[in-house]
Image (cartoon, rainbow, N blue to C red; front, top):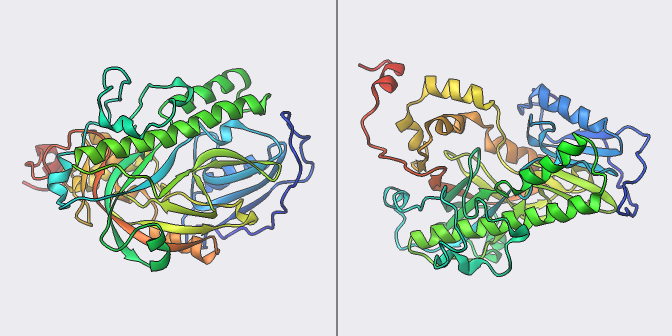
Length: 406
């Protein structure tokens, strides 16, 4: 546990051409928006300081879901006069969208079995008659069809959830949401397109700055649009499979992107835009998520947390979860929801205990006046990979042995 670091950030107002501005000579500032009781790994703080030392860096705002990432911290917004593709990462365009859905009955056991195979991509020719295509109004960005309509691995998911507690009825009503309403929550990104863009940069320039920011931003913007389109396609595929009509998202915020704001490159890696927007801050598959009205200012680089944030590495989560839980226990959560996941290793890696307490993350956002909770959503079915099997299936002998059972 670490104390908060509070330092003021003066907005940089300068116009940027297609070329990078000269690096600043003054040290960058770092602010950690977490309470002294919030768990923040020292490695994540070290990464924040390393980013702050980069040429041109102005300010690093670390969210309460901060944790170490590959090359840069996850859960941070980083403002600089220099554009660094590595600070956005490989999954450009990753974000979370919320789609209202109307179903006659919401019985998790029945609905879990009806989720389509979201590992199977949609092919524009082979699947030309799939009704999900109706949500595609324009051409596919960058012509990238690999993985189209798939959710991916890691912490990505599609979730059927119910609106539970409503804190701000007026705000929720403006979004068309009320207690008991059902929503599809979709968390995924650009499915290889962003990785291709980052790899092209790093193979030529390593972790350095983009030599041609305009060229990078053009490719980057394609990946952001692709990620949003993919979330719509996923929601449409699931809606049709469950016997419902697809809807427009009431929330769709990307949390892996770079924005040119007030003449500065604002890199977000696992941080959602927080300047007057609605954001779904994802909990875990066994806890609530929080829809918040974000109102973060310049100290926070106009950003808020994007989720609970990992507190264990995948290796640690795999080891500890295997010792503590059976597969069957992880397929039915403490809130009574079901998890569709045929990948046993992923099931353990993504156990709810691998993440921080979402209530603590939200409390930190509120305490630092970055966001106001609007409502919570509670999962009914969380889809990770196909083939859930049966939640009531007899336990495997090795699972019983781990739990000390005969």
